[in-house]
Image (cartoon, rainbow, N blue to C red; front, top):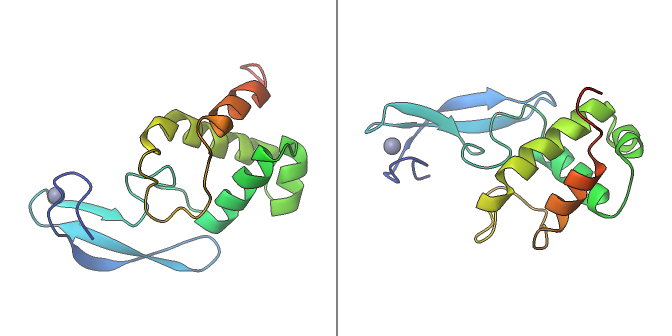
Length: 125
Ligand SMILES: [Zn+2]
């Protein structure tokens, strides 16, 4: 895996454990002395929930499912769903092209961006 900063080849450097018990490979760049994982530099960076669950939640949100209904489906609180959407919306400009590695769901154009902005509750909720 290439270092997201300098694009040099990074070496494998142990694993991180996700909430669901699965492990994700971590890497170390000898040039930058940075430690990162498969999600670094993607919208999923530093999320502790499996990207499959996040991707599923965001996908059904783009199909028009409400925030609270989505939360019930993936067994997360609606505030968690909102946080995921904000993370993706904040970084969506870097998604296309090309799609980041490790993301199965495809977001068409700025569709998700638009929906996320429309569906967000007013600040302070
Ligand atoms: Zn590097």
